[in-house]
Length: 437
Image (cartoon, helix red, strand yellow):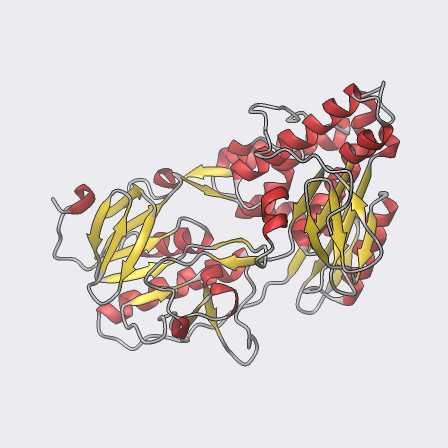
């Protein structure tokens, strides 16, 4: 046996770092080929990230959007999963250093995905909430509920308002969907849960640095989404940049300031970069690895990158493909075919992205969908959004559980997962009377 108790084999060893959409898609493509596949991830589950905001707002339990990686590829020959965190890649030696040992590879695929980008702003990184993983979503869920419990206990009206005020920074799908979900909680659930608290004073503020929300979608989708949010009572602020946050006061580049105990940062992501691949000549904006049309990392013949961590510059996508699930899944499938072709010494096929459209939901009966030749909003868009998300969820049980939850929430105007399972405690104490300078 070699490192990590993985047997040596005459078959080529392909190591995939990351069990996200790209990594799982690639592993499935290679499952029955004559190769040894080793998948490494620091979690033993795959996360369906588009529905994280529903975990944060009590609409779904976390286990309904997570799926065991081992189960995804159960029964596939020559497949090995190891729970590991990769510390360093040594491309000159074809080895990886991990927290459970070192391992060699014939071909390496980096599919590490992305993480929240705070753009170097330390105060925001320290005091705000991110929502890129299940633990982060559970922390946010606990904090939201704890804030209302705390608001009940204080006699200070100023502090009570601060505890019931939410600032979401970033007007992309994550920010828009979270704002819509919070607005629905304020409208339908809080008055019943907290009859002795004036929950009408709760404020949901969505701040966007540009001149429209959902900037990656069509203008009609942006306008309609904004109208939906305003109808739900969300305050939409455009052309405002958040510059600092001390846990209570939100500093912006304008005269507008906010006082809120919770700030959710959804204003950007960056690729998760691993030591050994962090040379300047390999990286693009946002830590993404430069790859060619066959997903090969620039200058490295047997190292590939797919999904959010890769940047393939084409005529249609000069800044790389969108950091979303669809491109990652298509790249995983394409690379699976190309790796087999490469091993068989056949020419590889360049990757062509088929844009299947984009969508966002703003709440009950409200969504916007942009397809290539067809754009629509409202109830039908909402049904399409639900169908697409159910279809791409991994696992029959998860689909059934999510569908039943959605039906129940729709009929009862309720979100039963509003539980503080593990209380979230901020790691700092803020005692300030004045806003940040």
